[in-house]
Image (cartoon, rainbow, N blue to C red; front, side, top):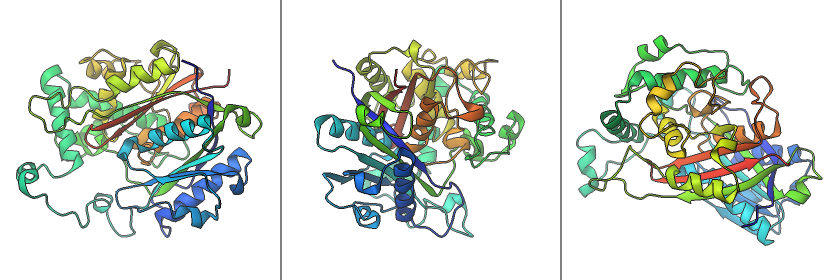
Length: 388
């Protein structure tokens, strides 16, 4: 199998967090403009557009008109929840390699935060109660992604002895990384393990800091051919490998919910396509809607043995800026910003370019990126690399 020849040539990110007065569509348009400028391109150079947004964002193909793009050869809106961003990079790379399009803009944006409203209200307003068979779990208080992920974490804890304290080490480590990222919402606000344990429960075993942020903003990337990317403004970030895995077994009796995710299939497949191995991956950007999601994905990729992720996270010198295992170097969705799968994609591009500043990892020739969607229902993996 030949190594893919697509590359990410542009990266655009708007202000993140509690940014008011703009719609998701406006954030999306701004992010695309920033990505084009970053690459040294004009908007007119874009002939493909892949768009996605949050559950309520309603950012669709009409973004073409907001950007004034004409004669596009590729246009679609996509939804794979947290796996969407990685999937869009995959489809854009295939489009470029097939000749379907030359320069594809990929964008994800959302604006769930409203002034004078809590972050917890961002995704909850207007949600109807499930009916029929789907109402069985709701009648027992399981009515949100957080409660479902909490059940998954409990399953892992029961089988492998994973503890809340071990999850807390992930939260603290990612907050440490965020102190080196000026774009992070928690930049300038460190976290101790004691503060983690003292924070309120959202759904046991999850404390407040086990859960991702809520953010307004947008992120975009530009995918083109490696040959063309080499002539543009930024160091090319090669898209070397990709794979998807969508288990579809949530709620099935005697399933492996909470014990394994689609990363177990997609990770090895993406590495094989990239003609590389896990040992050659110097840095990973893991989808971390919850601390537990990061732990499970690291196990499924093989960075730590199955069932031993908890003790590994608590091992001195393992994670964090000075740790042996470099992952979520920008702070992740727990401490930087929550742009679904675009959070890990953004940081992966920054690291592969060598533009991480104080948080830059020396070994960044191969970057593994994960995207997780639903309640461990959907997964995508990317392998990005430097141009060498």
